[in-house]
Length: 99
Image (cartoon, rainbow, N blue to C red; front, side):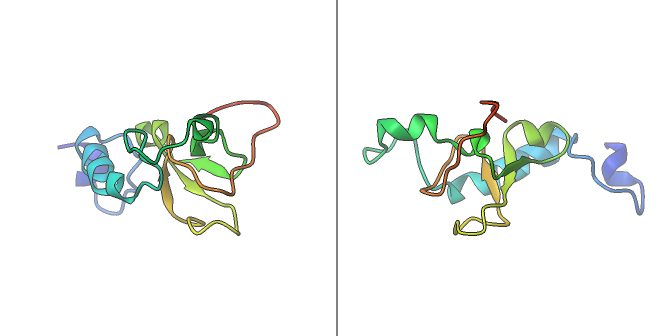
């Protein structure tokens, strides 16, 4: 068992692969924009959460795909979001970084 899960009082670092996979599968259905859905719009490709000014990556390996929205006007403010998801409140980062 990973030390993150077995050590009492120790914070989970986001590097437990089994726990990451469980979170990933549990959170995926909450996506707003499904790239394989007929309603997906091509312009959304460049407006993904991972490139948004208001997206903050989670810690550890889980943060490679997941972050938290901090855009106060978004319905997703304060929620874990998949980096390839998006919403109408996207704001590009000035440095052009992603993730």
